[in-house]
Length: 290
Image (tube, rainbow, N blue to C red; front, side, top):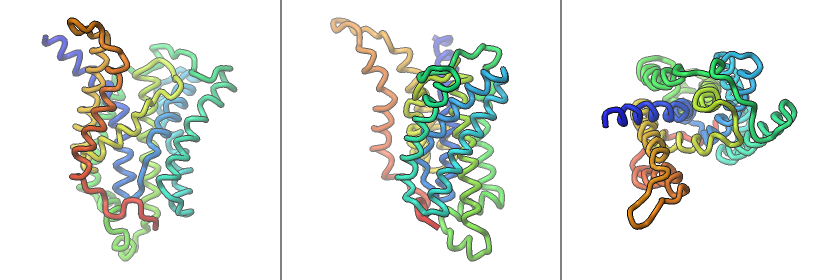
């Protein structure tokens, strides 16, 4: 029994890693006042870029850097649309997600003559533990930055009272740009953990909705780092459990269809949001253009 619990705990930490990194990125962006539905796309390009760089260099560290950079570039494109151009943030994020879904197959066809995945990455060129530590440190670091530093205070004001921040002589646009790019780096790192930590290659659409689950965890955590950490762990436990339940047989009914078990984390996400979203208060200026 104890061994099974330890295995479940280890699987939970592994599965929570991409969720945590993406959720912390979303937290930075949304606390600054910018809706970030594009986390899914940033994770996807981060996963692909990390796999490509790791294959080319043999270094997971450079792969992680490549995934972060890909997330930053996509965040910059989104930032141009929603900050100076004042595009609708939800529509722009949807476009970014669609763009991100199309980039990896196109580039993979050029590089590897396939559109579904990259070649397998050797174990020595992948991470074994490090991304878990990074994911667990990120919420604590953000808790300290947001609650104890001047930069954190400015970011909070950008999302709650941007006019007061501007009246104090601080550029709200600069604060939001900084938060957006940092969010891109974190979401890209979360995507990188999918291809060079949880898996051994990039596969098509491998983020599988994790960006949206990270947003759900962010809402459940009421846009605060430590509660969001526990929300991500909650969703990761559900994911770990559904993996172990595959092949379950019920006496008299036979084997439970695997599709019913695989949708468990997503159904749980919907149920939790339906029960808690009304009790969460978003930053007051979230989604409002400058």
